[in-house]
Length: 368
Length: 81
Image 1 (cartoon, each protein chain N blue to C red):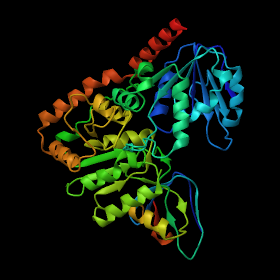
Image 2: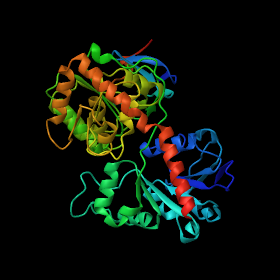
Image 3: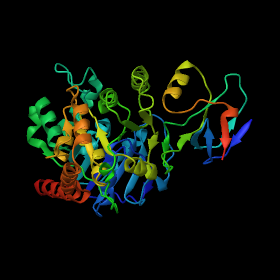
Image 4: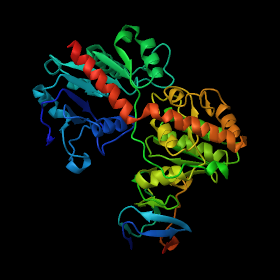
């Protein structure tokens, strides 16, 4: 265990497995924003869920305050945790919440995704992953409040579990927007460079995106880590078979300044996800004015409300249609769409998100 | 053996790459190739690909690397700049 000025005297404690530089995806972005805007009543427990004990460095954790870092086999130490509200953001953390630990506390599960395959099989939404289902259901059962990060996610959860309906609330995720001195106006001169950035995961729809690109005279740039060998091989085989080697380029796992420059190099970002509970990546593009051509399945539809370049990822040919629309539209039309994106951003800022959580904590404590 | 220091930008078959670690390239019958394509990289110039030494262990790696814009090469293909 590694204590970074964790006082153990908080109203709210977040137990999480993504914090500081230890990130996997959108849940980590959410957690870092919650940390950035925390008040003196809020603490954070970072739980290393890897099987192996890891070394951690204080410098991995931003301001190095109000954080307790522990490995999985030290979870029993949470018995001594003092707080009014325990917040968990991942079903794999359910094991931490023993009867002793949750006694006299309110439990909030901030659900960054209902953990089903995509699309969820109708007769068995968890696709045979009974262990995941068991942990997920236990966490939902013991929670007093279930937070969904979009209305779409709430609909998904309540359609699977009508019995949870009354304890579900929707609080959108949010980010701190960076000030960009100049909006991306590449589209005024070029509509030939498109990009994807994110995990290499079949849920992200990268293969479908490459397929739709086959008959489009443009370049697709892909920036991602290698999360799935088999999926990568499928993508590579398709690129080779379709003779697209010169039009599909890989830029590696871009972070920091490289990620910024990757996004700035694009005329539009493609978000081809089969389903996205929220869709942080769209916000990252929007803050720089980069046009997005996006799937509308899940939270993305809410972030991109009123926007034109979105499509149903399960309808073949629709992405290509939207790309062609984007390519052929006038500058004025693209500018109008860019304005819609810029106007939508405010609803998904970190300030708004934190304020909504503050209200939630207050209402829970009033009821306690 | 060739040694290339970490963060050195160099050319492999005309493509500009940057070593993400110290690279030591021993002689071996299969030749070698260069790749660190899937590790996090914050190097700002996106036209420079992040690479590291990886030995060719089999056809599968060979296939993946050839198809992901990374150049397979041996020491005669390297040009320090």
